[in-house]
Length: 204
Image 1 (spheres, one colour):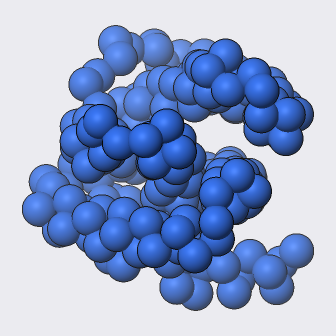
Image 2: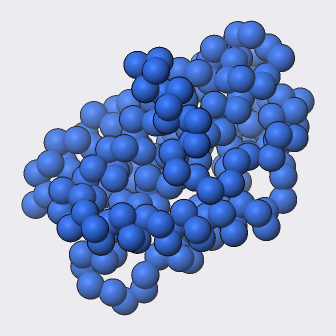
């Protein structure tokens, strides 16, 4: 597993632009904000997986594979919430997720059901991949040893989620089509990341 992860993270999950190194330092001094944002990210991931199951009940593999992810993501939400409580910190208000909203803008509008489904799978894969990359940065760059280990666990989990969404896309849609569209998503995300403000109060 360790070898597999290190290869995954050498050029992290195909992402074209690494996180700005300043982000880890900013996140560490805004721990309450980053934990709050992290908690809501996990919550939204669970809700999105439920929605995907509701919209695609005929896709048995998707239903079978995403059902346990719902439980896992909600478990992650509870872990982050417990960490906030342990530190005497509050779960703040959910913020507007500019990163995810910008990704949604790139989804094909008015395409075929297959095209819309593909973009739904790939946007989830991309969010999980960037989350994994961010958790990797935290697990390596935070001064607090406990928090480094805390985020290492999340990094390992998100890497598996990223690959699952790609696998599901390729199960229902021709692999060549999936890979071509994935390249387009990666290029778009690179531009998005390059133009985004570096802020330590958010995971994305």
